[in-house]
Every structure is written in structure tokens, then in C-alpha cells.
Image (cartoon, rainbow, N blue to C red):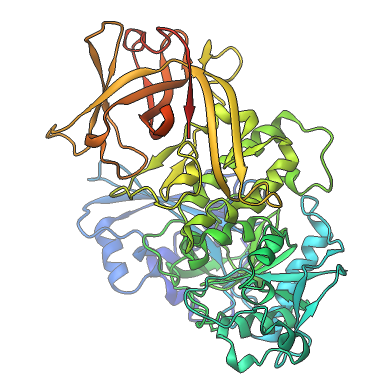
Length: 636
């Protein structure tokens, strides 16, 4: 056993004498660190653990139990995140401690997981990959760290597209002079640029047909612009990227025609700030991480250092304890989704530090410990130059799953202008069109149209009203403001799994708001289906639920079968619905399941969707599904 070399006498005081002489000896700690071993185990009493914790032992504080009595078995193991395709935390090689305790008087064991990080000058830094957060995101040295992440991506990430020259947007901001940047009319020139993806949150100066000439000739007086805009100009300059695109300034905001031309542009790089409104800015110092513990680390070479432990799971959304990307302001804004996922690379000025995002990984600058992201990346196929000649079955499955997730993620976000519902997703839809080469029908795809009709609404509270202004047909998830949950039918539709029955698509026509934007807004649409239409009715007043109960007419003329409580797509006065119907879309011919739509009558003998119904159970409960004569219905 090598002799321990302790450079700092305070290290030993981080834990109690009992812990130092058990877990933190050289042999014991190396057993705990070895991923090939079963870890290191030892025994203490709950009373001694509690006493040591009260006296300041950082290790005992991790798992002390206030009321436990008697013997406690403690087991510690370590493993390393090494596979970039599957790891949750970065950087690669981040070590995870798993601590398990079993008190004698407890029925079930307790388990805790932590990731380790340390500082660059600590003895443990030769063995621990992750570092502490970079807090001063505006420092020039930290822009260099961000550039290093970018350069490493270019050199070593085979899954990331290489930078390439592409046409610049019609207008960009030249950030060469950060105090007086100018708008440049690009006239089709090629080059690199960065986009600001942010939350407006309040009024700000905009470019119009009246002031564009002045912004081009005289530039922008930065002191008149909100802090987020000023920070974006400075950041682009410090990252070495000359041109910046900001929607408020690079689109003529009083020109509908110009907005149409600019929508859906894909960009290679994005900077995403954590500000909730444009006046806040995003270059403030970040809060320090508060670790779960600071403990000794016995290095394999006999030196003694220290590491900090960060809990793998935390409660709440306190940036000092951990990072949750889904709680950033931009992740509640509909437009920001496509600005993020269509970017091959992003610099994210997050609430905790500055991050670099690409198609391979998300990392914090300076190799700081980085929690996993919750959003999915788009499949690689959508970034391939040109139309891919062949796609593997895995590519097709992944593309389908990614589209379903995009709808789920996008529909939970908010939009200031409700009629932007399809417009703000148009760029993503256009990229998927490159993969599928299918017609896009008001948020649904022609080649999976029947499946796409079967979305549901996630209800966390009270349903909202259906928007008064038309934005999409009732059979599209884009017609409402709710959080849509599209269904994945790959298991049910797997060849040989079921004998599938389905209705047939007769006709689907969509009238675009602009022929220049085939993936954006629509002004009218109808869908004709050939299938089985079944009369249904609602009943109210059941004390078990505030939801209406749905009944469907079965084979017997006067018999209605109970289909359970059903929530609808929006706040609907179902008592005023003269008649309701169930229209099955997909079903098992052996009657083990059915997925369909709940319909109400509309003008001109048409129908409108008011809800989704999925039902599985005993075959005798679903014999009505494909009973009767098929008929053609029109939904609007």
C-alpha cells in the first residue's frame, strides 16, 4: 500500500476519524473506485453516524437518518460515464458514486447517486474529469473556452456536420464594431452567422420599412437597445463570428411579405440566453454550485485530493443545486424550439454557466460537470446535405419518434400570436419533409395520416377554450392551445402483431395561407374518410368525476355501452352538442383495442373533432367497432 501524501492538512478534517480509518484508507478507497469490483462495504451504527454528522463529518451527513437505530450496512461503488451515446452527464469519463445503506430497523435500503467533480489544481484532477462551473461567462478567457468546445467538435465529432458556407439571410448585423453595429444587406452573399434565440417578454426597438435605411447607413445606437441585444452583439464579436441575426432587427416587422420570406431559415450556430425578457441581458455572473458534500479523494498514485459530490437527482429548480434545462425561459416559448433544434451548434448562456451544444453532446465550458439535457436532437438524416437516397429502417423509426416528440415538446410551449401555431414549427416540418418526401397537411403527414389523427390532450388542470380565430382544422393538434400527446403505434402496427382494421382516406385538401410557405399556416382544410360511424351520447352528474361519461350505441338499436369518463380536446359545452359520434380510425379485428375520434356535427353536413378515444379490453366490448355499413364522412 503506497504511503498517503497529504498536501493540505485540512483534508482529513472533512470526515470523522472512523470514516478516515475505514472508507478513506488507500486499499478501501481503491476498491470502491474500481468499476470491476463490487464496491466497498463496511458497517457502523446509526447512533455513531448521527453523532459524526452532528460533529461535521461530510460523509456521514450524506446518509444520516434521524430516527434509525442499531447497525447500518454501508456499500459504495463507482462507475464511469464513458459512452457518449448513452451517458447522461458530461464531460466523458465523469465518475458516478452510488451509495447504498441498510439500517437494521429499516424495511428497505436507501440508495443515493452522485457525480464527482473537482478543481483543476487539486490532486484529484488527474483522475476526475469533471470540474466546477465557470461563473464569469462574460470573461474573454471563457469565450476562448467556448471556442475550444467548438473546435473540438469540428475535429472529433463524426456525427456533427462540418461547417460550410451557406447563403446569409437577407439582412444580418455586422458586429465588428460592438458600439455601433450596422445592419448589412447581404444580397445573396455566403458566409457564417449566428442567430439569437431569446424571449422578447416586452416591447423593444424593431426594424421597419421606415428605419431600415438609417440602420444600414448609420448603424445601431447600442445604448438605445435592451441589454439582451447588446449582450448578443458583444458575444458574437467575442466568439469571433462577424454576423449576427436577430428577428426583431433583421426582419421588417411591419411587412407581412418580408416575414413570409424570412420564416424557416435554418442557421448553423445559435446563442441562447437564459433571460426571461429582453431587458435582462445574459452576461451576468452565474451562481456557484452548492455540492451535496466535499470529501477526501484517495488517488491511485497515493496522493490525497478532494472531490465535490453533486446529487444525480434533485428536488425543485434551484440553480445552485443542479440544472434543469426545461425550466429555462426560452424552453417555454414556441418559436425557440425550432431555433434550437435546427441549429447544428449552439452556445447556450444558461442559468448555471455557458454551454456548448452540438449533434453529439452538450457540455459546459471548462469541462464543468454538466447535467443531462431533456430535449431530443433531430435525427441525423434531416441534416444530410441534399435528399438521402436510402434510409435504413432504424433511420425511419428514429425520424418518426423524433417528430412525435417535437409535437409533444412544441405544443406545451406558448405563443404570443396564436395563429403562429403552424408557422413557428414550419422549419422543423420542412426538415422532416427532406426525410419522408410526403405531403404536409396542417401539422400531419400524408403517409402516416391515420396515426397522426389520433393525438390526445395532456390535461394537468382545466381545459382551455377552443381558439376563436381559425388556425387549423379541428382534426389537427394545431387547432387548439393544449399540450398535445401524439400516439406512437409502432408496436400495434408491427407486422404480425395484430390483424389491423382501419378506415380509409378518401381525400384531404389544405388551403395554404401562403404558397411560399407549404409548411406554415392554413386558412381552410377538409378530410374525407371512409369508415364506421357510431352514434354516441354524453351523460353528466356522476359523483366520481367532473368529466362527462361517453356511451356508444351498440348492435342493439336501443342499447348504449359505457365507454367511461372522457376529457375532450378543449372546453366544450357538450350538453349543447345535439349528437355525438365515435369514428374508429384503427382497431384490432379481433376486437382487443380501438383508437378513434369523438365527433360532433358541423355546418354543411360535415363533422368536427371534439376528442380522442382509445379503448382496450375484452373482445365482446368492442364488437360494435366494425359493425354496420361503411360511409364517407367529411371533417373540417
